[in-house]
Length: 151
Image 1 (tube, rainbow, N blue to C red):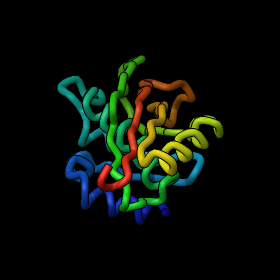
Image 2 (cartoon, helix red, strand yellow; image 1 turned 180 degrees about the vertical axis):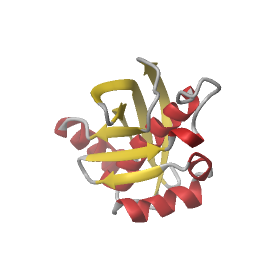
Image 3 (cartoon, one colour; image 1 turned 45 degrees about the horizontal axis):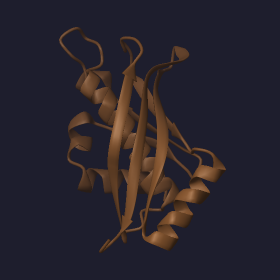
């Protein structure tokens, strides 16, 4: 599934996507990139609101897993089980989140569990960046659970 096609899925199924003006910039089996404009996601100080950063990280991770790896398989339910965010510094510019595929072994174990048991968990990491820096400004470590329908 490509970014544009999955963007439609997000807008139809996750209302927050529209309010934040979240955009799935790119999507592949190896990574997803999502962005949200600072002007729609700022706080009283003009910096990015922590909740918007968190949601951008979660949406980007979800997009990689469900759209990039699982190709939008409608027989699956995908849930975030937990997520721990670390805000490293104030975000004062337009920002982008990146979720890269975990190790090949983690992906294989996840897919094998999904096939054999009808459910599986996978740990993901995503990060917030701005164009002017290669340093992450926020990090999310999350665990997602996939369930085959009826499980």
